[in-house]
Image (cartoon, rainbow, N blue to C red; front, side, top):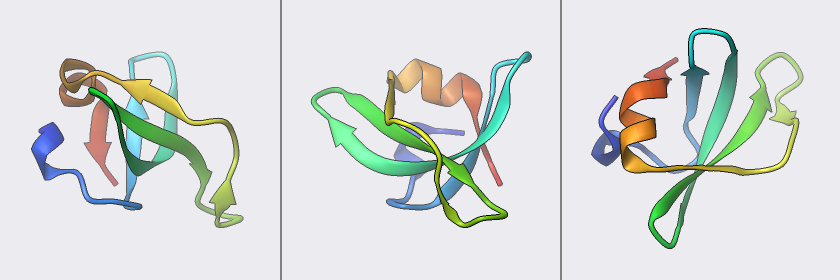
Length: 64
């Protein structure tokens, strides 16, 4: 997915080949994209925010 297509507080799938989880896009912090792990069954955040670069977003983030 292209980083320019991200929408605030939308749910996406992070997949790096070993790990797959739902994440919510929360915005930007300087030059990085902020994502928070999200439990779709319980409908709440489940961890601390993580930052990804634009190339990492293009590689690991998929639409839900």
